[in-house]
Length: 234
Length: 274
Image (cartoon, rainbow over all chains, first blue to last red; front, side, top):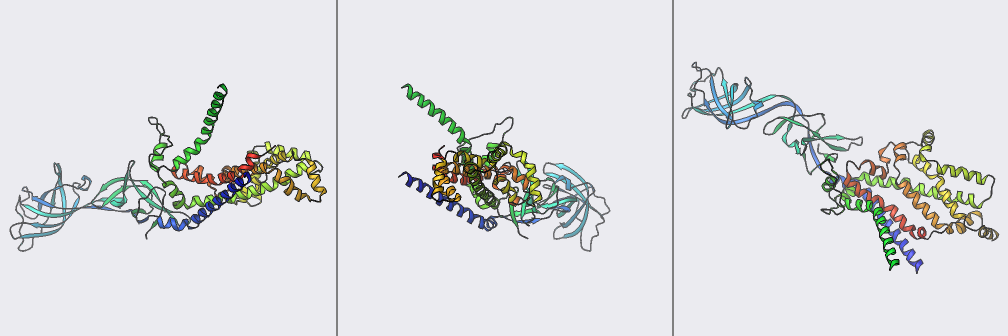
């Protein structure tokens, strides 16, 4: 009886051992396939040098203090979302102005205006830009002083070292970070958390201060974590 | 009544000691079914906030096993590396120990006791003393960064010989002489007469050798540089800081082979005489 119990324990242990080893062997054999199947797919980007631009569609008021020679035009408008760093005194503002002037008359202009004044108001930053040497075509009229016109302007920031799309920036309890993609000797790709400091941002892009020039994860099919292996969609 | 109280106290003391021994295993198993965030929270301590050790998970999760089995193929490969290193050591050491112990106990040859004395000296010598000569020898043999650098030094140790010799000493010489008279060869005497009588000792040797080498860390770090050849024991010690959750699950998996080996030999181990 005792001997039977002993042999049944042994045979059970042998069966369990064989089952365990077979399961582990199968998982090991297919581990690469399973892992690849479950790996997050990421798209990458490179943080290049560049400027940020800030587009504004708003109304402006023609400055009543405009010089009377009629060749230049000052207009005031509120920049409600633009970062202060974009609007610098003396900086050039690319504008595509469709200035609605008088009734049934439109003055179209595109070119460059110069920021000649700015002040903080409740709604944001009130900016004064000046278009110099306006060359009116026949049939075009100058808007009247104090008149409200519609303008589309594009502000360009200074040149930054790293410009990234906003979706590449992640935020956590320790601040903002991005995932850099590196590869090992077997060409497997891994992501590594790297902290970044946001210097300026526009609607879709940010200028960041960061170390390293490896590719940066832009989007991921699944949640990723530091040190995780990923598949990069080239 | 007094006798009963004494028994209760004895059992209580034994139970406390048993719990103390089991606590790390219980703790490991409990942590292996916790979520990563719960484990990280438990291990985060600061001057204002003590580590929150607990054994009952707030939320039961098999996430760690999922990670260990399906998402970290390197751990499974390391598991096989562990087996690949440990099994040859156990087999070679078992064979060498049986033959050597039999020779030192039952065979008669010149300087037998003097040679055994040298074996005893080797036994009491810490492994760190032989580490550097071993390293130099392995380097000259061109075995560095191969699993043989781990297998060979560990396969030939004095411990098994001394252990089995102690068991074999109690086998009466008359049994062996009777077998010899019946025409049995030395090998037949060893495997058919002696070995069945020292099954308990042999089982103990197998289990102890397996556990000792299954947990090998230092030798691996010294002799092996290619991380692909690392056994799981090294991963458990080096990955613990980065990924404690998965390491608990790996620890539970890592525990299975020695446990199965013990269960397989449990009867012999418990019934070992002498």
